[in-house]
Image 1 (cartoon, one colour):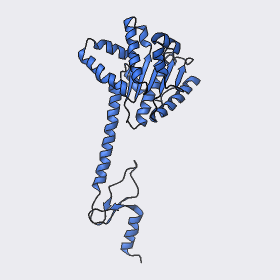
Image 2 (image 1 turned 45 degrees about the horizontal axis):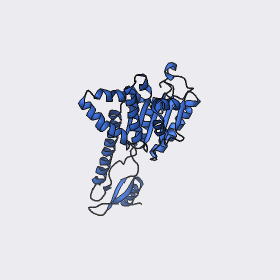
Image 3 (image 1 turned 180 degrees about the vertical axis):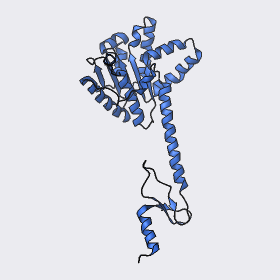
Image 4 (image 1 turned 90 degrees about the vertical axis):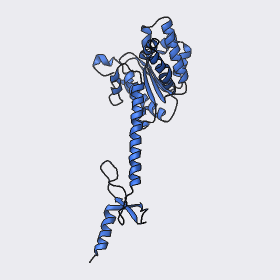
Length: 280
């Protein structure tokens, strides 16, 4: 007849697995072979002889979890609070809810995915997304920002800047010293140093600007593009390359399209999604 000790030993081998040696008595540490539904260990490794539990491992795992959650929270806070976005619902845009309605939007989505991979590989690539109003340029640009943030495990600093809104805030700050310090200090510095920056809707401000205001907008854009010459940048615009050159000059356009080989998206034939009832 099989001894009780042997039976217990076989049972232990069936449901438990050795996980090192007990630091107290040098006997084996055991843990469950099966894990929790979420993939985590059911308990810390435990000594069957003296009852020692490897609390340090559990504490280290807890510390790592808290750190990762903190890193994620900081990255999302930097993204949402540091960005300049007039319509906050834009933050709800993602690749998943980007609507492919024709060949142009299909190509745009495929190009965006390739661009995301390039950014995650650390390449200083620029993406220029042009097309008529309402075709989904801002949606796709925001989706790129979110995807890079998530797939980098929230290790990258990312900003989304609605260019017209940004210029209005800068102009308004001339009469608000505290706001001006914030913009000229941390915000501009973050735009110049973030891992990825989206500059959205370049050219939209031209309809409201003239004279010195237009010169100010071009000067500000040139400053940003100069600082981001070798950094990942996404730019969206309603203007064609010819219109961009006429509005801002060839020097700015050259900087805009630098590092954009293979990452220039044009949606000129896509219908306005807002008219069709599709989120843009």
